[in-house]
Image (tube, rainbow, N blue to C red; front, side):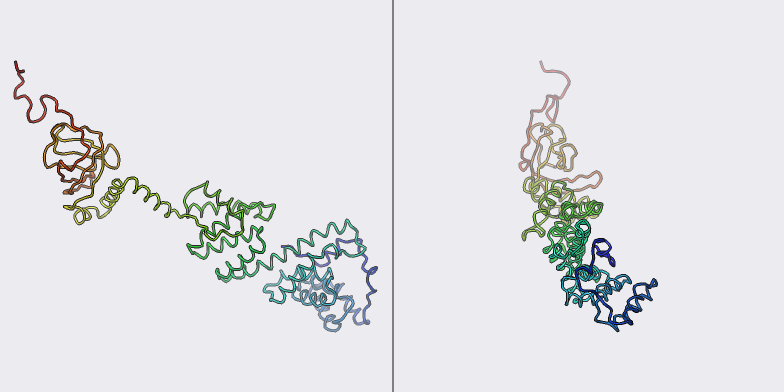
Length: 426
C-alpha cells in the first residue's frame, strides 16, 4: 500500500502558487519565526524534531499548520501527523496536505488506535470522493494528471488496509475465528480483491475444521482464477498460490483436473460459496465407488473383504475363528481346473481374476461328466482349510449346490469305466 512522503503533493505541482489563493501567512512574532526557520533548516532529524515540538508547544495556533504537518512527516512521526492532521481537518476539511498525510501515515503506526483508524478512514474517503475538487488553484493540468492517480491509489490503499488490519491482527494472535470473521467482512466489502479471498481461504485451512475446508478451497480457487489486472493476485504470487491449491485440492478430493477447473469457474461467480456448497473428499469418493462396486458385484465384493482379512497379519487366526466350519454366502468364480479331469471331485476356482485359483471345492460326490474350464460357476460351501502360500481356501460343498457347471461326455478310456485291456472289441 502506498504512503506519500513529506511534501510530495507540492513537489509534483511546480505550478502551484499557494499565496495566490489564500491570505498571506504570517508568523506571530520573532520567536515563532526562529523556531519555524530552525525546524525547516535543521539537517539532523533529532534536532528538527526538537524544534518542531517546541514550535508546536509554544505556538499551537499558527498559519503554518500544513507546513508543520509536512515537517513532522519528514522526521517520521506518524502519530503526530495523524493527531495534528485531524485537528487541521476539523477547521479545514478539504486540506489536501492533511488529507494525504493522515491517510498515508496511519499505516506507519505499529498499533493504531480505533480513533486513529477512524481519522485515517475519514481522510482517505474524503480524498477519494473529492479528488477533482481538491485540485489546488493554479496547478497546471499536466502536473495534476501526474499526481491524481497517486492520490487515488493512496486513498484506496488506505481504505483497503484499514479493512484488512483486523484480520491481520487476529492472525498474529492465531485467533483464526476472529480472522475468519474479519476477512469475510473484508471480502464482502471488496468482492473483487483476490488478496482477501486468499486470506480467508488460508485462514479457514488454519482452523483445521473439516467442515470449513470446502469453503477454504473455494476461496483460494477464486483468488487463483481472478484476473490479476482486475483485483486478482499479482504474478508470480498467483502461480505460487495455484501450486498450493493443486496440492491441497488433490489431498482433499483426489486428482481431478476437470473438477478443479469447474471449482475455479464457480468461484469466479461469487465471493462466497452458496449455502449448500460441498466438495467430496477422497474418502467420500472411495466409499461411493465401493458402494457402487458392491451393488454391481456383491459376490466379488464379499470375497475381496474375505481375502483382505486372510492376507492380513492375522489371516490364519481369522480363518480359524471366523471362517472354518461356517457357511459362506454364495460366491462366484471361474473354473480353472478339475481333478480328475472327468467325473471330478475337486474343482479349483479363480475369483479375483480368471486365471489364478483361490478356492478348491471338495464335492460330496463325483460329477457325471467332464466339466468345462473357463466357465463361470456359483456355489455355497463350508471352509475347511487354508494356506497362505500359495493362497488357497478349501471349501466342502455338495454337488447340488454348484451352479453353472457345463459337463461334457468323458472320452473313451478315461475315468473309472475305461477299457480293461488294450485289445479292441470285435
